[in-house]
Image 1 (spheres, rainbow, N blue to C red):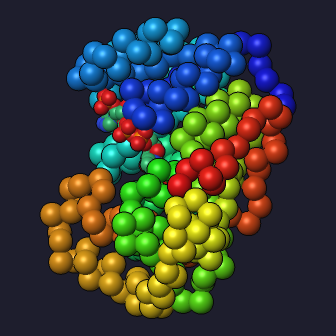
Image 2: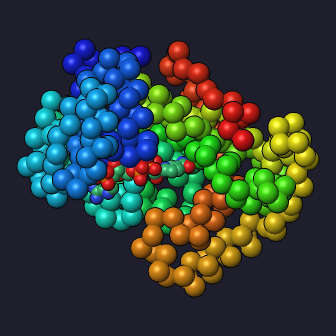
Amino acid sequence: MMTNMENLVLVSGATGNLGQRICRELIKNDIKVRAIVRHESKADKINTLEKLGVEVVKVDTSNEQDLIAACTGVSCVVSAVAGLHDVIVEAQSKLLKAAIAAGVPRFIPSDFSTDITQMPEGENRNFDLRKEFHKLLDQSPIQATSIFNGCFTDILRYNTPLFNVPKKTVAYYDDKADWEIDFTTMDDTAAYTALAAVDETTPRYLNIASFRVSPSDLVSLSEQYKGAKFELVHMGSMEEFSAYNKMQRAAQPEGENDLYPKWQQSQYLYSMFLVHHNNLDNDRYGGLSWSPVEANI
Ligand SMILES: NC(=O)c1ccc[n+]([C@@H]2O[C@H](COP(=O)([O-])OP(=O)(O)OC[C@H]3O[C@@H](n4cnc5c(N)ncnc54)[C@H](OP(=O)(O)O)[C@@H]3O)[C@@H](O)[C@H]2O)c1
């Protein structure tokens, strides 16, 4: 891995769940971290960052000069913001513009998702927002790297149709009972992102997964770890699933203003069965340990 002695990583979204973990991992690796926070960001979250050793800079995220000043001297911007068009497209575009103006060489956008390049438009609203931002990012004079981690492992504890503990069911679509789904813990994602942030030779995309499991694997795991063999339930075809999601979205337009309305959650499930990562880049950095599936169900 090629690293620069003068690394200074700027994290946006540092007060968030993933962002804070990325800051912690950067500090753990003795990398200087600057975080931009908003005037309205919660004081306790800022406090936590400061205690970690992060240089916290309060900015007006709509103010170009504030953002350029925050980007000055930075070797890589890592964005871990979460939100809708105003955040993923608009706020990230402002940050990107400021990073370029300040001469920052590298930018890691807030993707942290399944490989969205394999997803057709119109199937996942939140992925479409990332795709929209990528159009700008890919025309920009900055080295961009997206980290695709599949699904955060937390979803295995949310009793979604994929793995429903109270109902003791595991869902699958089409003939995809053996379809492997990529899962990564937030901590593993953060540890990997911290190393990617100081790796000057990263490619455009990096795919990672703590583990991969299929619906059939989840049935076996339920027997081993949940004390009962869950029922494998065929939920219909992917075509029907896509049509259902579109119908739900059209019927609940108020969800357009929510980050995770019910139909968006269903679109994520659809994405999990449509796309998986072909090659994993887990081994790019040494010294990382990947959380096993047993620890996450
Ligand atoms: N693959 C998966 O399964 C999965 C699951 C969940 C999340 N994710 C992704 O992981 C990334 C981080 O998500 P998260 O759950 O850690 O987010 P989170 O905890 O909700 O934190 C969101 C962060 O974004 C900041 N933010 C919100 N609006 C902003 C704006 N207009 N300008 C600047 N900053 C703004 C927040 O700052 P304040 O503190 O100031 O509000 C906060 O730091 C996102 O890309 C998300 O989509 C992936």
